[in-house]
Length: 170
Image (cartoon, rainbow, N blue to C red; front, top):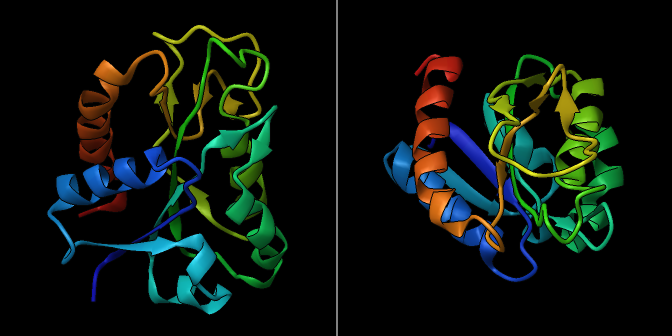
């Protein structure tokens, strides 16, 4: 059984591709199990002490549709004792007022349910005006932008996974 459960929703494939890169950086399927949020049950979260959540911000500050459908189910999950990291592709140029809002929406809900957020990421190097995902000057997770900064994705993931290994205590 993998130590880490990565739960993602993907509309266009970017989030799934990023999830696969994250899995590879952690060492593959033996380290991280990928879970498509449209295919799981709330009890699937119970299998992991370490959780990674991947959800793009969709439209104007909304959750990706599969996460939107699953959102109320989060109320039935006890995240106490679990370390939870977040990542998301977004478009900081096209949607500067809602950049990475999905991260903030999910992080707030999961934290209310006992999840301990890890994997905070600096806001430097991004051009946006507002985000529900910023707490104390940092994003609550890894902010990616395939539309405007795709050339930075792999290096950002590599750096973030190194950070997570330490914060997960692995």
